[in-house]
Length: 500
Ligand code: GLN
Image 1 (tube, rainbow, N blue to C red):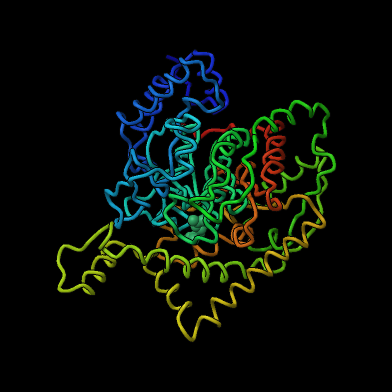
Image 2 (cartoon, helix red, strand yellow):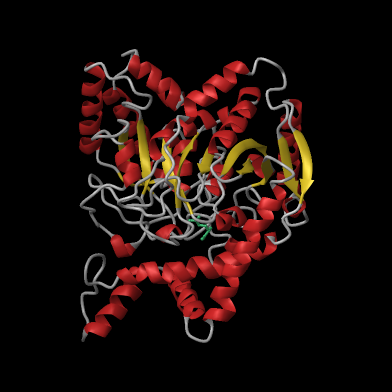
C-alpha cells in the first residue's frame, strides 16, 4: 500500500475510493497507524480501532453496492464536544470522563456511515474544556502540541482537530466556533476552516457552551475539502434545534469546482470588493502577521479583487462584550452538571448541597469555574442591566457596523490572530492574555456572520499565519469560492510540517 495516502485531500481520497483503488478499511488502518505513531501530539482523546473498522466495512459495503457519494468511506475525526454513540464524549472535561451518549449529534449523524454521507470516524479530538480557550491548554486531559513546533500551542479550542489535520493524522475534522475556535486553530496550524453563519449547522448534540454563538464547521487542508464536508453537515434540523436555519444545504463543492473551471482568465475574482477594516490592521497586530496578511491580499489583487478601506469601530469592545455574554450563557448551560443526572459525582459528601458543590468543584477546571462565576455575576439582580443587557446592546451595534461595512465591500479580510502560535504554558496563567488574542474573531461571532481562515504564509519562527475572510449572512459559498481561487493560485495550504 502506498505510504503517502495521508498526503491526499478528501477529494482525492474520495476519488480513489470510488475507483476502488483503495478500500475504506485500508484507509482507516493507514490513518489509525499514523494516529498511534504520533500520539505524542495529544490530538486524540479517544480512538477505537474496532469501531472505526466496523464503520469502514459498512462504507466499503456501500461502495461495493455501487453507491458513489462524495465522502463515502473517507475517514475523519470529531472534536470531542460532539456527542457520539460509538466513542466516549468528554468535552475536554473531567466532568464528563467516560461519558457515553445514547445518541449521535446531528452533524455526526449527517457525516457518518449509518444513514449519512458515509465518513468513517477515527475517534474524538482533544479540545479546551467545554470549548473555553484559545490554546488548547485548558483541556483537563493534556495540552495539544502544534505539529509545526511541538513546543507551541495549536490554538483553541478546536486544537486537537487542527493539529490532527495539520499533521495529516486525518484528512478532515469537525470543529466548533463560539468566538474563533475553528478559525484561530486553523490559522495557527496552517489549515483551512470555516465557521458558517450562525444556525447553518444544527447544534443538536454539541455540548453547549454559549448557545447564541456556538456553531459547527469543517476543518481540512483546503477550501474544497471544507466545502465537501459542509455540504453534508449543514441544513435545517427543526425538530431538534429551533435555531437551525430554514435553508436547504447547498452543494458547495460542485459550485467551487465549476467556478474553478470557469475561471480560465487570470482575474477570476474581478469585481470582488474586499474590505479591510482599519481596526484589524493596527498596532495590536504583530509585524510578521501583518506582513504575511498583506502579502496574501496582494495575491487577491492579482486575481482581480479590489481592496477597499472600511471601518468596524467597535472591534475593541467585542472582547468585553463577548466575555460577558459567553460566560453568562455558559453559567446557565453548565448548571445541568450537578452530579445527579450524568457526569462526575463526588465520592464523599454530607448532604445534597454538599454533593452539588463537591461534584462541580472536582469536575470543572479553573477556566470553566471562572466563567461560571463571571456569568452568574453578570446575570445577577442588580448587575444584569449594567453588564449583560449593556453587552447585548453593544452586540447589536457590532452587527450593524458589519452591515454598514458590507455596503462598501463583498467580503471583509484581515488577520485571524494577532500573533503566530505561542509557547505552551506561556499564557496558561493569564486568562486575559488569552482573551485578548481573540480580538479579530469575536466580532463576527457576535454578529453571527460566517468566517474562515485560509493559510496565507509563515511568520515568526516559521509558524503558519492565517488570513481571515468574513462574509455576509449565508455567504458561505462566496467565502469558499474566494478561498478556492486563492488556493488554486497559491500553495500555502499544501505546505506541511516536517518530521511528522
Ligand atoms: N477563545 C474563545 C473562548 O475562550 C473562543 C472559544 C470558542 O470559540 N469555542 O471563549
